[in-house]
Image 1 (cartoon, rainbow, N blue to C red):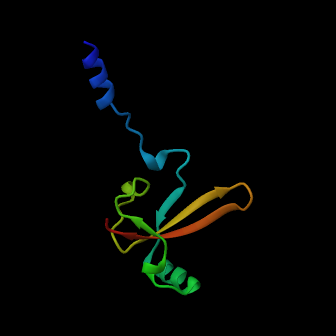
Image 2 (image 1 turned 180 degrees about the vertical axis):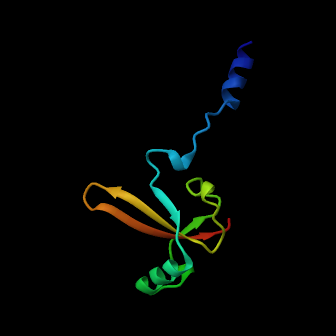
Length: 91
């Protein structure tokens, strides 16, 4: 009986959608034109940007594919809001 309870606890997981979590900042796909402007502003190639995997839980629901660029908007107590960019790659 106790083994069934332990087995039930081990297999039972609560389903939390990661993008809806309070600690996950806003993630959005940016257009190719906006991505080109970002690369021009930072004078770099897409592969020189920080990377994010296409199966990352924070972007799972966005429908991203390798080659897309993600804009992450984080709230900051000192700066107000910070913007970060990630280049999507396959695992």
